[in-house]
Amino acid sequence: MGTIRPIPRRMGLKAPTPASSSDRPAAQPASGALRATSRTFELKGEIHRKLISVLNLDKVNSLPRDRVRMEIGRVVEKLLQEQRVPMTTAEENQIIEEVLDEVFGLGPLEPLLKEPSISDILINGPNKVYVERFGKLTLTGIRFKDNAHLLHVIEKIVSKVGRRVDEANPIVDARLQDGSRVNAIIPPLALDGPSMSIRRFGKHVITSEELIEKKTITRSMLEFMAACVAAKSTVLISGGTGSGKTTTLNAMSRFIPEEERIVTIEDTAELQLQQRHVVKFETRPPNLNKEGGINQRQLVRTALRMRPDRIIIGECRGGEALDMLQAMNTGVEGSMTTIHANTPRDAFSRLEAMMLMADLEIPSKVLIQQLASAIKLVCQVARLQDGSRKITSIAEVLGVEDGRVKTQDIFLFERTGMTPDGRVQGRFRSSGVKPKILDRLRMAGITLRPDIFDEVLEVNPE
Ligand SMILES: Nc1ncnc2c1ncn2[C@@H]1O[C@H](COP(=O)(O)OP(=O)(O)OP(=O)(O)O)[C@@H](O)[C@H]1O
Ligand SMILES: [Mg+2]
Image (tube, rainbow, N blue to C red; front, side, top):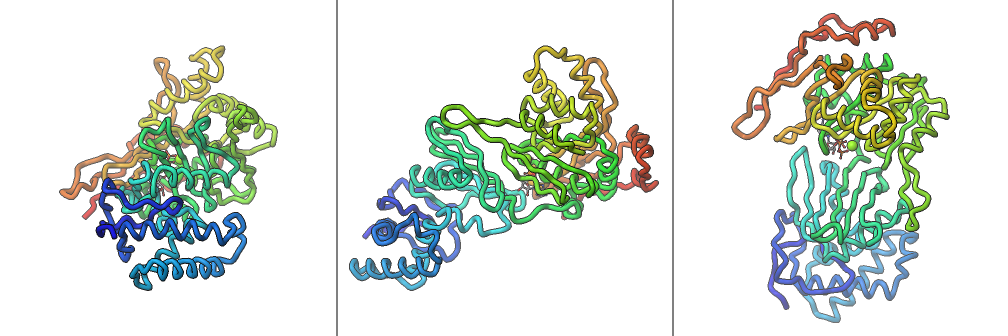
């Protein structure tokens, strides 16, 4: 019997090996977790193997969970008797649950997927699983048995959406059944074993009211955005990784009138629009023979033939920027997209670069002009050091100056300091300029509350 180790809560079940001395202690042992000894790990492996011999695991998914649970219970009991392993009923039940998770679900990830407060799950190899709760990342005690076990779980996820991951395709995007977005990258590209990030989306869509509650945006800013979206102003949402771009896009899309026809284009469908008249497209990566791939650019072109009122591109990453921009300049106004950039200026440089890549023939001067006339507003989103998300600026596009798109802030978040425990202080306010876009709103028959630019909201966490 091996020594009692700190609690790696979940282990793989494919090939039993004793927990090796290199196993690091779990950072955050889940409460009530099984006191794992090397013998327990061996046992779980044996149970799994026995199960495979008594159950047809391919068919098992069609059997009721209770039935499988009973079978597993029987195997466990028999093994325990045979091997005279002392185990409490709670421990026995936990082993059964873990084997069930392995058979029916995503193994060690299952307990995390059941926890609604977790927004991101980041797996860096089999021994390091981080989660984000309320904007803060923490290491968990969740483990995979080894690289092969983690890879098996990744394969399970991607095969469900008809994709594959192997040495020839080491990078893959996929989706969980609840809509959560998955990105995985495996060796040889990932150096420390397979790595996967899961952005949980399925359970709850953050509403615009919640954005106000969380002090991501003020009511005045939201009302202003609502008016601009309703007036068919094209909006670019810019921000860093995980800053809340997609969430903001989702929330803003709510202000698109119900009668409009919307086409959404994404690499991995994650937008959750509230309107009824939505046509959703998702790209498809090429197969092993590099055939059959459909990219966002092709989908934008198709969308244009479908009489859309608006096109929403989940994230602009390449040539589709050009097609979208040209479409907007020829009538499909009020479209929205997100872009990975740290400032509005950055966002325009990136868009320009993407468009140049799509068509080298068009002079950059023309592209910049097109950008400046198509895009009306840029919403900059940021994830601050304390994990909070803020719309740090809503800027309007004024035109082109010195070969660059010129913007001016209408609303901004001004940082003023930091509390001793590291929380960001600041205030939301308007910049004081009279926005040019008010003319557009007036033309669309939209009037804003007269004091909309007067609100100042102090963010002063206790
Ligand atoms: N205002 C907010 N307050 C709290 N959490 C938020 C807020 N906005 C987004 N989040 C959370 O942050 C995570 C990232 O959000 P989102 O997917 O919108 O970011 P993103 O910028 O689109 O990310 P990516 O760069 O990966 O596409 C999600 O889990 C989401 O629930
Ligand atoms: Mg996103």
